[in-house]
Image (tube, rainbow, N blue to C red):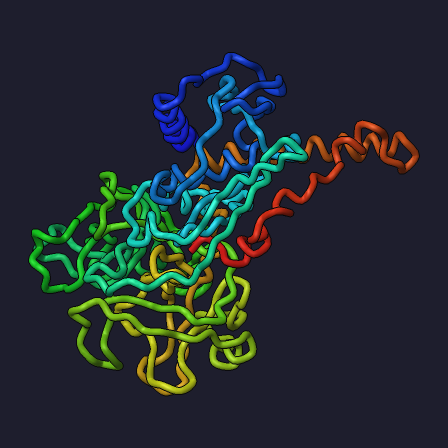
Length: 463
């Protein structure tokens, strides 16, 4: 992610203005002196204290307000990243925080090699999400005289107050239009903005017999009756339907819409993340401008419903095999949500819209795409949603093709290395040779002195 690295390097370059020493012209692993203390020149992600400051500063957290430690002097640059004079205890070759990003409320989350999740962190770091720059974390360097180095104390408490409700509560939701011009277009399905050029929706929404293909997407609105001058309307350049979708079947009901022009993000228009594998114990929210009930009018104001997940057995019982669902409900690729106690459901006209999570009331993640259901407004009813996590690799390949190709090449390199390891083991009679042992040696626990472990971060996720 070149742009991300460029932003960080700019920040570090500016920090040099306040230091007498900036670039020490030393190579990696050479000894160095910073602020009168002995250190070692290492890549910034090998220095935990610098890596944490690096991540938070470039996610919009003010260095002074959050009392972040000073960055160490820069020894040199390697692969467009700074090599710093690190005084941390226990510096190794490991780059523990390399695959981490900062999410809502300052929570560190692991990207786990996911392009979609990396983009989620990237968007959070540069766009005006309501909780961006708000957090309750601390990074402290504690000098240990007996060791002549700094131990790192990192903490993050999530007990932070909420926010007032805003008009633009769902800044990623799109209303999709059919027709030749904006004034006469019919606005029927929903969608979710996920990048500067792509909107996620349902495959069955992409065209109708009477109106043809989707031609417009309206963004940033709350009501259908909002004056058109307030609608951010984008013309649809191309429609990419999942290759396995075959109408009128209900399987693989997912599609992507590419806009003719780039979407300009702001406070009232922000992209949502893609869920990669979440449990929904706390329920989810669905939103759309669909009908207010069976045979009722379409909603003028964007509607929001809180829904609970039905288990696999319940869903299979409600949606048994029929001509449009040949094998019945498919839990791997679909999910169903509703309410056991109230008459709450999505309805006709909500199709294509998001089923979303919003753990920190800040940055949404799309868990499902509204697909189909039985008559809405019936107690105990549940709608079926396309499970987004199953389709993330396909979405990434369409929306971020360059990153997908780079990841594929990197994965192939890992495969080649593993084949070499297997060959080494075979040639050593089933035992690890010296080269293999070195390659396989696990790194130390990089957070042994921290108050919050990386496992906790992974459980909390990024939004």
